[in-house]
Length: 312
Image 1: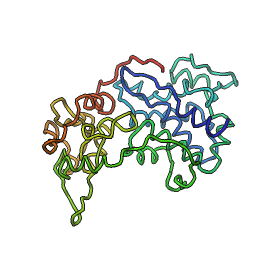
Image 2 (image 1 turned 180 degrees about the vertical axis):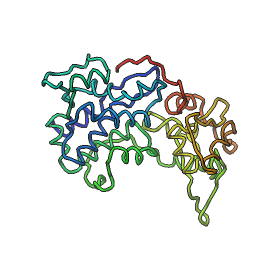
Image 3 (image 1 turned 120 degrees about the vertical axis):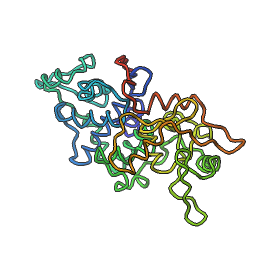
């Protein structure tokens, strides 16, 4: 396996389909394994060790489920179905565990399931720059920038400390963000948060304001004003985490799963049902198709995910 082959395998991870929603189960398992490798130099792990932390990652950064038993065992899906060109999965007796094995945590625990990234992949990950490049690829393909820090913290990766920018081999292509997108979105909303109206500035320079994609850039969202909102840093993060969402008619919705005790936290509740600010004349409002995408793929709503799971 070469560097390019490893990156190709990671870029081509087949994703399960949960209803019509994204299911970043495999990328989250691999990111967790990369964090494990960064800490110990190895990825070998039993299902029993992986079940709780990987299931929490999927619950936090993937689509929601309502069944408590399913929430506890969500690591079973990627543990079984991660591509075998990358992943070696065996039982207690050393026998291979096939991808047709039922995705049940109780079965995997009973069989003593344990896996590791293949030795040739681990050898490549030990080379300067490869681990950070692999993590960056998965983050860019499956998530949005506001989630990079919380995901990396959750899996134990410090990309800045790896000096990734200097170590990524030349020639690796990324889907670049269009220059000017952020400024166009901020101008369209008169440099004020479309949710709360925050318009802070340091002298003549706006502070704490960001251009948010409604349909994420990593999920083919265009760098255009009709897919953007000017949001303060707090509401951008809450929007990307699915705490805040949009209703048809461009009103704000707050996830029923959001809880708080402080007065500052309760200010988020007050946003529910409030209209999103309209852009300046001549600028397009958010396209309804992107509102629908965010509602289906990001917003945390109880009962939003059906049990209809089809492996891709």
